[in-house]
Image 1 (cartoon, chains in turn orange, cyan):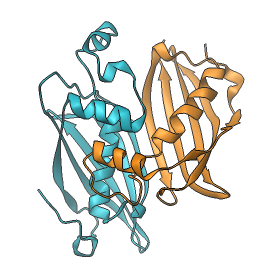
Image 2: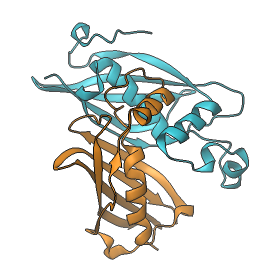
Image 3: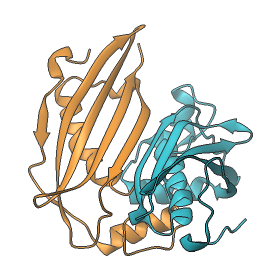
Amino acid sequence: MFNPDAVGKSRKSSTTFKVTQESISNFAHAIGESEIINSSVTYSIMISLGPSQALLEENGLDWTRVVHGDQKFQNNRPLHAGDEVTCTSTIETYRAVAGNEIVTVRTDLHCEEELAQVQWTTLVMRG
Amino acid sequence: MDHSGDARMRKVELGYQIPAETYKINRATLVEYANAGGDQNPIHQDEEVAKAVGLPDVIAHGMLTMALAGRYVTKWAGHSAAVTEISSRFTKPVVVPAGVDVEITISAVIEEVSARQVKLDITAECAGVKVLGMAKATVSLL
């Protein structure tokens, strides 16, 4: 079971993620886009995935039961090659409903002091 | 199908239905997306694993479908920097059998207009079934 007291817990990634032109281009190509200077709208999922998963696992997330419920991106600006991104993930909400557990984690993506993007990921652990 | 990437030519009017676009994906797309997006969950690549967990076959990453919605909105917006928000629920899986091109059709309606931005209500369908729920995007007009 997920730790119900995890709400509010936060974790800052210990390393920065350096955005490369290659990773921006690979993502764009995989989804059939040609724009390669600005990152694709949902590109940063590849950066947040590891840090947000680490926080959830520390708090008892059982991956064998998980489905991705919903996802939101708030992009103050696209990412570019050379950006060094630090992720801070925070567990915002948790609830148990009809045997399922639903957890939402927010990840703030900072480039130095600038908050470039924010994501919310909601996962459902099926009962 | 092409509704022009020139944002100056687009129609910004409440209720306007932006022309739909259809994107084809197949197993190779899923492998490419997994490598580019960092999600190597085998249910998106390995038929045996997918079936073992009760799925009919390999399914696309929900994030791939959302990325295609992002591509669609970006094209209408003119560039990705204008797309300030996108959100979606993953309501139904997109099943991708081996050797088949699966079509995902995306469209949107302008549901809110202000001087600064427009809000879009996005529909994503595969084989007549809506695969995203409550899919919304915000496009800056500044």
